[in-house]
Image 1 (tube, rainbow, N blue to C red):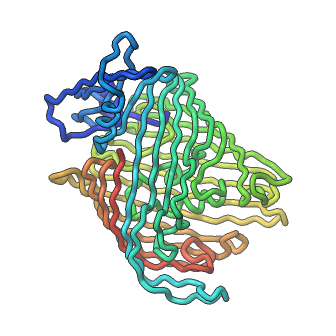
Image 2: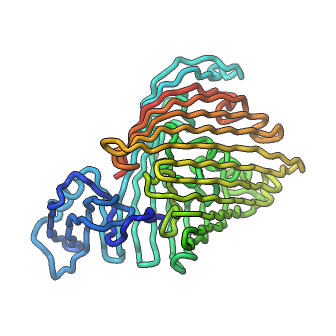
Image 3: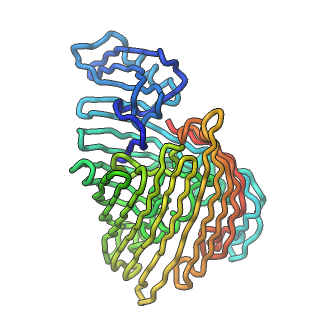
Amino acid sequence: MGWSRAPGWPRRHRCSFASRAAPASTSLLWATTCATLDVRLSWTRGPITSRCPPSAICWRVRHRPLTEQGSFPMKRWLLGLFSLPGFAQQVQLPGLQELRIGAGVQITGIYTRGTLADISKQGRLEPVDDRFDLAIRRARLTVSGRIRNDLDFRVIFYYDNVGRDRFTGTRGTPSEGNVGIWDAFWMWSARPGWLHLTIGYFRPQLGREHITSGFQTNSSMDKLPTQNYLRFHAIGRSNGRETGINAGGLYLGRGWSVNYNAGFFDASHEKLVGEAYGGQRWSPLLVGRLALTLGQPEMSNYGIDYQINYFGRRRGITGALNYSHQGHTNVFSKNEVAGFDVLANYGPLNFDAEFESLRRLRLDGARYRDRVWHVRTGYNIRARTGWVEPVVAVMRFTGSPLSVWANGRDRVTDLGVNWYVQQTRIKFNVHYTRQSGCPLSGYDDGKIRRGNMVGLGIQLVY
């Protein structure tokens, strides 16, 4: 259900997380008892899937029949289980084949210089003090699992931008710690390989930056604004999620592969329909993406999660075309996105690029087209502990005179270094981001003009 094994990784055991800290000979077996639940916990080493990196030790928790009950109290088992940091548990319960719990957090410290803001509310931008902002940029709590061999599910909760200063250089809305639903979907493998049906609340498969998790991208303190303009235009919500159904599949040939997705979504955001939760006029959002890979595939099993950095394991190039269409609503007569993206991994080199054409036919008959693109490249250097990746990225946005972003310009150049201690599970980074442009845009919306920034970040996924 979106978890895919990276090329070259063995596949026997199904584990959720790994730690290299324990010695090879380590083994632990606890038997526990409860009136309704009895589990066995063990460490196991050996061939594993992408849910655990190679040569790692994984947690496995198996349901035991009541006839095998032990005598240790459940409280002791829970204490031992959750007091071990860095582990996501995989549990099997009656009615479920698997249950997994995981979490991730990104904490940033960003110094921003040169921000201007409309403090007086009179349309005049004034300088504000330079500042250092410490915030929880994004945090996730994931509950996922398998109901049967062909039916998986995932529910993700989020609390983002906690403690964020509104005048910092990154883009987003400050939060007081509000918690909400990020993803909630179920995936049925109707025909393993070539037909998988996903239903629920998730990202329409449109544009690489948009469909790649912020825990997997490799630039800046955040994802590139490429996705912001696409989401604003086609989906409305800043998180890029919508309720719908998607059919997708993956065909693996010899030295090549094809991945397709086609989705039907009930787009209900007021930016698209004119009123919150639905307007007088209604039209579905139709989305499609077709990707062709030469060389090693991005994934060995179908999923709707994507990576940028494969840490030298992949040698292949993927090119994809995407398109979305929505008909008449209270906001427009027609709304479209057409674009393409490329991902190339060759040993230590990581390269990706994307271009999106955002087209709209307004209710008055006028047409316009905005354009957004980015290019990004990184190079992995094997370090004593993990990997070091210098990265450079460039993003550009151009708004049409008739656009919602009328005559807007947005330019971002990002230079930085990522240090992957345990691939993307433990990551440190330092980046400098230069921003420029003119209103109306994400850089300058007429109320705040973002300054340049230098930041430090830490990422933990467990």
